[in-house]
Image (cartoon, rainbow, N blue to C red; front, side, top):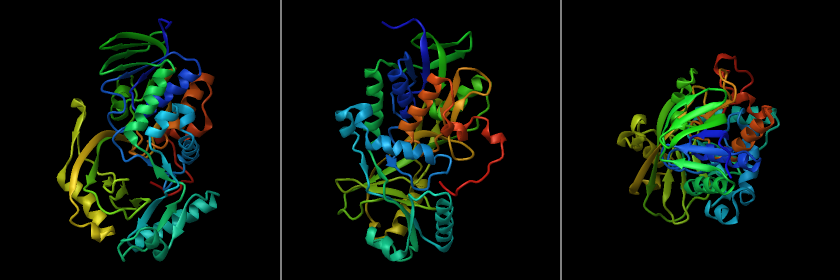
Length: 384
């Protein structure tokens, strides 16, 4: 039987919110997730599904390593059937290709920085080895960075897996339900379309809307709203196994099991946040297609058969806000994953939940403090 008061109210039912809810429920907390659309509708379920250590910002690396372990053992958290449906494929590699001297020099500096810090997940490849792994790669490519442990998953199914596992653990989901007001009154009172909910903690996992939620509570957390765009081509003969990304180009693609190419690259369409939707922008999509053709000339003429977009938020320094509010006790902000939060989600869920339950901040989250933009940044590794 549910208590009248929640231990935690999570605003936003994306992958981060569902993962946090799951681990809180496993710790014995009573949790409600309020989602204005359907769980996983935006960035969580419509991204490319990349599982990468490759080119991670140094601040994300400890969490990313833990997350990779969790993806490798996904059934432990969401069950065998849901894990199988999530189509996790690790060990297929991700490769960041260098198409000019500037990118190759950047790659050398990146690898040097990583080695200096004792991080050995990335390797520098010369042009011949790169072309062996990527048949059809342009002769102008000078080399690449590879992370052999990396891979990909099915984002929509993975988001659903965490949502369903959380619900099975006792989490209540209120979907298609808008949060109208959040009041810090001896705890928290959250007024929604489904009624008023009272709880001890609020976790703001509102994604592209996260900054708006924070602003209503008196905190300025800057966020640029993006409409990340994906394209799918007609089927072509299988030719590439790794996920391919650019170093300084709008390039990211993988080949599906049926042969179609799923192309991203951080291309933003037109976000319409107030209506909860977004649209593709053709000339921006063309830049992603052009980068793909520059790298793999034989793909010229392959038709794009469908596209989609999803709303995401990007912070000024490229990593998310994850931590307690600087203004209100028992309020956390977890948003702004800049288009690369999918892989991190299991570890975010685990560490945020453990921090809330214990009352002690996990040290791996210190770098994501919501007030960090006012502090100097030191000893960074080049990364994306």
